[in-house]
Image (cartoon, rainbow, N blue to C red; front, top):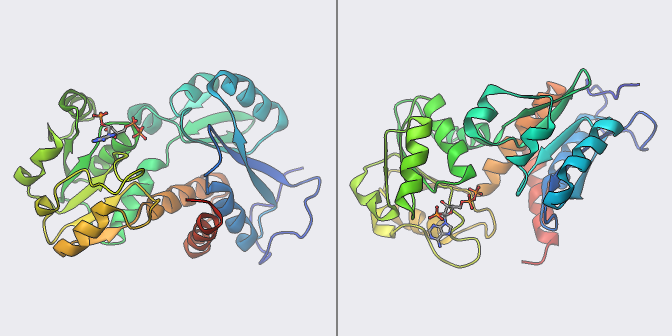
Length: 288
Ligand code: ATR
């Protein structure tokens, strides 16, 4: 029997039962993921009969894990580091956007088929659009890994002009060429690219109190989004604020990409405030 994903009830059924749908996230290591907290809170708020778990799957076990998910009728899987590229080989279909970005972060079961898609790009677009329109905006994406690819795609889809800056120049050039960005350079070149939006898609700031760019290169009127969500106030965001820029924490990128996952599966709008609060509570429970 299918689970009730259409809503109606104000809260999740009290009991996990025979019709409860299973969803989850595959990643390795799994210790710090806040996705179960966000999704379970959304299920409860929308009255969706489903549970969402974290599956710690090392690379060697990915194929077996996906086959298991298929056999067990798992409804939706989020896919995170290090599986976003490798998972494609195990699916029935990968949509065009995920192919273009080169990464799948969402697998949804549709008529028994496992379909791969990418919601990272829409997460970054929606997080930024809470502050300003991207159409015609001059944007800079810092980094040239998977997160940067999603961010560059988002900027281009929304009609922004985008320059990719990365520590390793060759990688910035390659990404810019492949996706059709408007320019590429090293991180130090921020000063020579006047911009309205900066997205940090490097991992700088995650393990140490450092910013990928000089504070003095951040324009006062810019909107700055940091993919790093822990710590919440990264050095980059503190610098940006001190310069008079508007800032958006990495939490919002994650919340919006998770909201889109829920919409892909259930067709329903996600309760962003509920997911955001669950994200915060999960963070407070974790050692830093
Ligand atoms: P993801 O797929 O999550 O984006 P990734 O592919 O490992 O992760 O990419 C990490 C990004 O952070 C890269 O752009 C990397 O720069 P390089 O391409 O030069 O390696 C950037 N990065 C990581 N550590 C950095 C550091 N200490 N200074 C500057 N950039 C750094």
